[in-house]
Image (tube, rainbow, N blue to C red):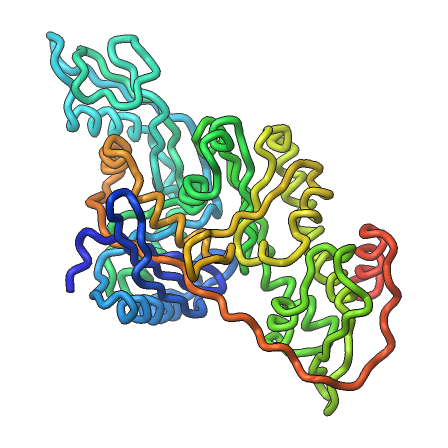
Length: 434
């Protein structure tokens, strides 16, 4: 079955590949198929092995095809914020000697004029965001089509990325047997879904806590103003747990999901759980507060680095504060920990669609919603970048399976309970990382 008229989104993450198939009926976006498979061939958000990534993409797409009962050929692909640059761009064309109506082709031509800036060899255009059009000196125009004038200008933002990253992304998707209808920058897509109109207008920071990296994006005046990535995410927390508790990565991931707290002040030293320790026949008991100190230590490092970068551009002064999303944002107490470290208001975004109510689904769901809601004039402007922007299918994010509780085992001595959050983190690093 042809998927024309649907939206198929492909979110290629470090730890999982997510595919969402959705259709828009009477203004309502309905998810009809989901694919979710572990990632291969990726490191810190970018593809490092094309063949492995292509195989993982193919598996996720096949899963979504079965659930949606369609054949998927064309996809909208998310682009990570790695090595991103945002810079102003301006375009200008003269329509004619005499005034006439501005057409769709004129909009495309003025956008192409704005793209005329010469780029370094290693850079590639990802997207162009129109901020306003100006017709014969009258500014603040959102869509100039049908207006009469002689001179048309466009002011906007040009978003460029690494040519190598984009090449590997396109190559892997094509090798999986898919055609890329359009690429969409992940922070842009998320801002459309995660933030309300006031937050986009007055300024808000989105912090996406993914498996392989953490991305902080600043949205102001409905535009992406800044984006930065930190090379650590949920996988690093899992590795810390594995090392400290001397257990496998698989067990560490289950422990993190079943018993983990981001804020050690919320965890209980009285609640214990069993851990399968390497080299021991009997499991060992660990308490939730001790585990929380391990998790909190890594998150605090990530937040500190992100905070330093945001302070350099005074982004933390924006009234919208911070919105957390991504899989790690599911940890209890993470909003409180972030609010304490960033010293601003913080909330966690969780999608409200049935079966997708987990922050790890945000990126894939945002990809579908963003592209489905693009205004005609935005589609015309983006077509100047060279993509064919006919509306096509997209996919949704995968469901996350809750981890089973472990069985009972032998107790060990409990670690000392911490009295203050800062002390616990300091002691943890002294014990294990110094």
